[in-house]
Image (cartoon, rainbow, N blue to C red; front, top):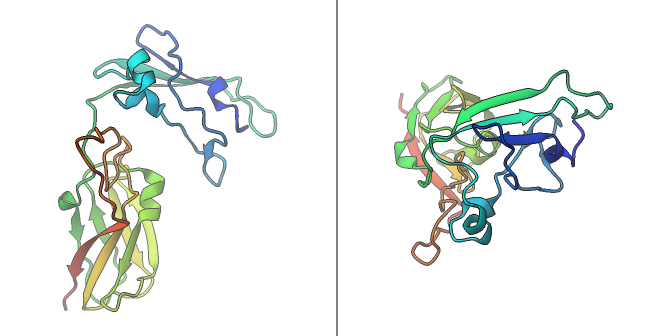
Amino acid sequence: MRSGESLQFIHLLDKNQDTLRNVFLNLQPELWDTTGTVLTLWLDPGRIKRGLTLNRALGNPLKMNETYHLVISATWKDQSGLKLAQTYRKTFVAVKRDDQAPDLKQWQLKLPKVGTTAPLEIKPWETLDHYLLLESIGIVDQNNSLVKGKIRLDKKDQQLLFVPTEPWKAQRYRLQIDARLEDLAGNNLNRVFDRDITKSKSRNKSYYELAFELKR
């Protein structure tokens, strides 16, 4: 799609079909993936973070248990100047505010067998940011060497599979998770997205680890 103009064609409507204003953050350049086919839109942080001017004036853009409609207009053109085949609409209901950072203590690992290239299965038990998740996971062996392999996501991004290039060995490994990893509410491993900075301090770690051992 043509970039730099998405907010002219993407709208959020309330249950009465009224268009909500000043909902999305107008980032330039826009957050497109490398294929140019996936766009990430942010709800304006000024609307979400309590105590900020926009939040006080306009309130949170989403209210719990309310129905909303995300509408993408058919008049939006692609890079070749062609319009979309139709208008697209996604209806959803807003749920309770997520004010908890991802909890690594809840993560479960299903260990592979030594001598195989079977995947290490990682279950965070919550949906995390798709692209950050692909970039945030690494494994090192007992010699602190990076284990080469590929990562893929499964079960609506609630399960991650790490497939090593070489067979697993009988030794201790450490799963390293970048602290930037976020859930869908923008809470990362160091801090929650909307917090009172006078009462809570964010951690300043660059990554976290989960150790596991493979035995014959």
